[in-house]
Length: 419
Image 1 (cartoon, rainbow, N blue to C red):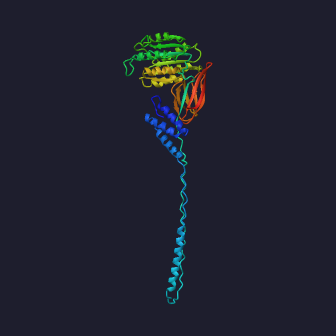
Image 2 (cartoon, rainbow, N blue to C red):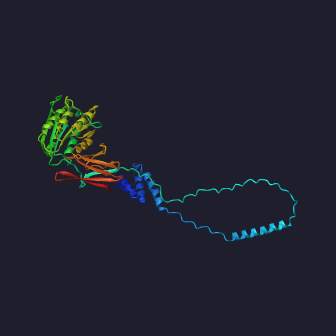
Image 3 (cartoon, helix red, strand yellow):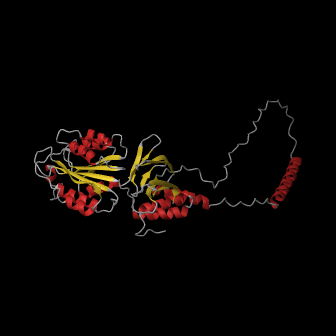
C-alpha cells in the first residue's frame, strides 16, 4: 500500500502492527516502508521491518534437495585384482631364481609391539533446519479511545454552572507577546465558551466577578447574573460589562463563599469555574472555602484556570484550590489556551489507573485517543455518579469505549482489540 494525503502516520503504524501480529510479513514490510517515507517519529519501525524480512525468508525457503547416492565403480576392483595377481607371480619367479644365502645363526630380538592407530572420530554436522529461532515479541503500546456511541463530539454539561471572572487591577496588564490587556483576552475566551454550543439549553448559569467598581476594596465582589436557565444573549451582554478598575483587589475566598450561597438551591451536578490571574490578596483562604463548597455534596466541583500567571508560587496555591474542590486545574497563557480550558471544565474527563492505583493517563470523553502500555487498567469516568470499568489493553491494539446516555444515566460498552 502507498500512503496518501489522507492517511495519518499513526494509522499507517497501527495497520502495520496488525499485519505484523497476524504474520502477514509482506504486507507489514510494505506498510512500515511507507511509514518511513512519511516520518521518522517511529524508531522501532526499522527493527520491525528487519524482523518481518527474516521471518519471510525462513518461511519462504525449503529443505535442501537430497543428493543422489554415489555409484560404486565396476572396473576398478577387476583391474586391481589382475594387478595383484601379476605382482605375486613376478615375486615368486624372482625368489626361485635368487641364489641361496649362507647360513646365518640369527639372534632373536624382541620386536616392539605396534600400536594400532585408532580411527579419528569426526563430528558430523547436523543438517540445516528451516525453522527460525524464536524471537522476543516487541512490546508495543496500545491505544485507548473513549468516545460517544454516535461518534459526535461528546460533552456532558453540568446541570448548574457558575463562573467567577477575575476583575482585579492586574487584569489590566497586557498578555505577554501581545498589545491586548488580560481582561480583554479573557472576555473573548468567555464569549467563545458561551457560544460554543457546549452548554446545554437545560443548564442553569450564573456569573460573578470582583474588582470592577472600586480600587483597593476587598468588599468589591458581586454577582452580575443570578443562576437561571442558560440564555446566550443575556450572558454575552453581561460579559461586556466585566471591565476591571485600576488597583482592584482579588477577594477569591469571599467570592467562592458567596458562590456557595448563589448555588444553595441548585440541584444536580454543579461546577464552579474560577478564572484568575493570581492568588488571593484579601487575606482570605480560598482553598478552605473550596473544601467547604464541596463538603458533603459529591456532585459539586471547583475548577480553577490560572491565566497569564506571573507571580512565583501562585500556580501551586491555585492548584490547591482545585484539589480541595475535587476539580481540575489548568494553566493558560493566552486566549486560545483559556478557551480550551473553559471547554474542558464542562466536558467529561476520565483517568486510566493501574492495578497499583497510579494514574497512567487522562483524557476527555470524545477527545483524542491516548497511548498506554499493554496491561490491565481501571477506566474512571468522572460522571455523576462516577463510572469505573476494568479493561485490557493488548499489545499494539486499540480499545474503544463507547459512552451513551440512557434514561439520564451514562452507560459504557467496551470493544477490546478493535481494528
